[in-house]
Image 1 (cartoon, rainbow, N blue to C red):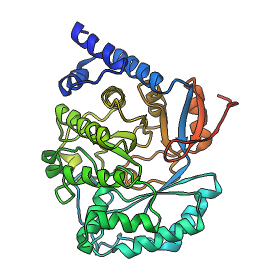
Image 2: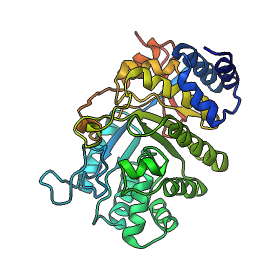
Image 3: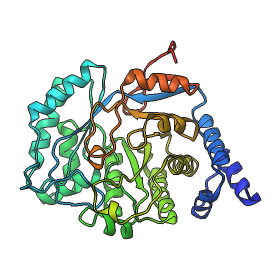
Length: 364
């Protein structure tokens, strides 16, 4: 390791703000030293030994999508024989099952459906809030909100106001991919631009709506473009303070058009590197999730020593990543055991990271 790299790691571990060039330089840092710096920064931000997860369900209300992203193996066209749209009763039943096992977060997303209009979501959100007042309606990516605004010929502000009035409580960070339009034109050309994605989040934050942010890496982006993605999130967080957490995950190439023409590194070591760099670069986003959905629970557990303070959601179900041929499942008991085995105290949290309960006696 060069003296310059060591200096970057030391300063980042102490909370210094990195430049984009310094962020790119960390892709050449030795992984153990990079992980140690990210772990030190995480422990400074979260000095108690508590590490968390949320009890939740990831529900896709439809697989119909006109975006046709080249990385997605899940979507179907409107007339495809496998196309579906869940009913409101189905979604309420899913939520009841989640509540029965202690879940509190309903993450509800779908595609860019060509005919599904705003009142459908307003009716659903109102029914969810009436039936399950303790459940967080964490729903609709910025891309979906921009799509609804186009369908209704309304402003994003008007769509957000109506969704919030109906019961929307927070927005997941899906559809970010890489927040660089060169990359978006290659992998998701029919989705909103990077500026539009960020603008939805800006407007949501202005309304007091918390959101998460994500990154899907390991396809056609360059390393500087990954850092540009992080820099754009960091700049918006400086402005609004509305991002509660960040979740990076690797592209899953199975069964997708993009998977047949990309050679991105999407393995465990690359994930841990991206996780650690994210912790060091995103000095103003408080929480970092080590997503186990794409690479498995053991890699997710190791991420707790590479800058992450959270293992994400119990999820209960997952269809999008599974469509690419990657399937992992877990539950609260397994996540508490993994956190405890990593040397931390497990705790269940809300979507906005308020602690609901800690698990002091866990057998590992």
